[in-house]
Image (cartoon, rainbow over all chains, first blue to last red; front, side, top):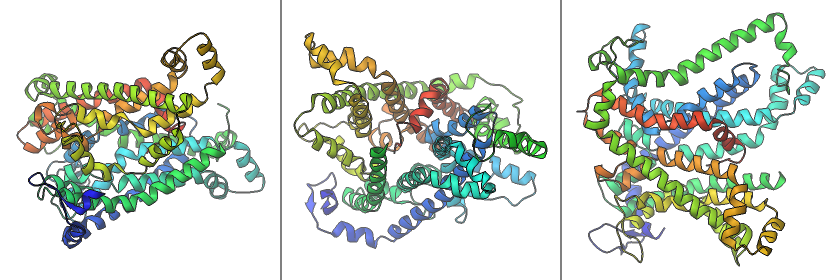
Length: 258
Length: 294
């Protein structure tokens, strides 16, 4: 905290500069870009990484065969080191002979520049990150689904509820806790996205620069200004802190009931 | 298979048309999972084994025509993957041991020895969970580069990774919860027999806590193996880098043959995949049961 009010570099002793660091970052045009990109990333990542695993889990839960296979397959990418994932996808995204464009070419569909096109770049990053992380959410949803007592479905059916009504009135209310917890966790995690933009598009690309990349950039590349980086961190903390508090309260409240 | 039912009952799925739909969905889902989650890993492995010219071909081969396992030897020796692999393993094992020692003693102290202000300490620790790692990046880096009071620079040393990870509030919390369930009578009995606090910890508490220790250990090693940003910051000297950091640096130069980088990726993944296949149960259970982990 204190750091954000000081001018820190390795040349001279820290000096108190008040809000100068904050006004410096506010005047950096990249500041708003980074925040906008981060919020966009989080928004798209939630659509894919929060909603899709839910439906995946619901369908897998209906399967009477290969349950172990589904669980292992969906979780394997989570085990890969993130750098491995990102480098692998970098080769898939390659605009020349990358796998994705090869497949699109084979299907006579228009090719894409993926990470290098301003329109597709953010979506490309989200896809990588979702692929790597959706296993966690899916497994948690699956565990929650298995805890729903079967009699409830039976009772609902007796009263003439169809599949959608059963999903809406039985499944979803019972998942409320895990749905809320994962929402908080995913917001906190995705807003700290770093490795995907860092490795795939670099620290200078305004299409994809995120708050974390900007912090890294302030402190360790161009500016070597730890004060500015700390000021940025403080802002990120203020935003994420609220979600963290909500998460901890939710979990400890539920923990006491259990 | 008769167990608790879900949206559909077993009987419903066995009847006429539903049966066909069920098997259709099952097949599609099996293929979808294979294509989406397993295929990229298959691609990585065969990519590393292909001849560089074959890998660069505009129309890729789905089954490699050439087979070059010696690329692993080249990557291991020429790219120094071996060294980075051992670095990573060394950091992971060290972090694991440090975490166990620090977290177990802390949790034991908080749970069984009940010091004055223990609850305050616990509360303060839980409060640190609120801090996103991101917010700590800069202060932690400055701390490590010039440790307060001692004024030593830990950059490029294993301690830069080990010390920040040692006191893990989440692990301490999980361990404390588990220790709380061990009946005090058991410890009192041991104390009557003349065992000291340390002795009780080693011969009674730890053996009882094996399952939770296993989960904590596995997650500690996985986290260290997967970490990227922190090692990237504190290990700038190439000799000391982890596999992830080194691979990022090597791939950015663009001068390294692609197949060797692919081999490096496979080498970096194998321990994780192996660990998962071996400890699958503990990992998946630890994820859901004990761990709504951040």
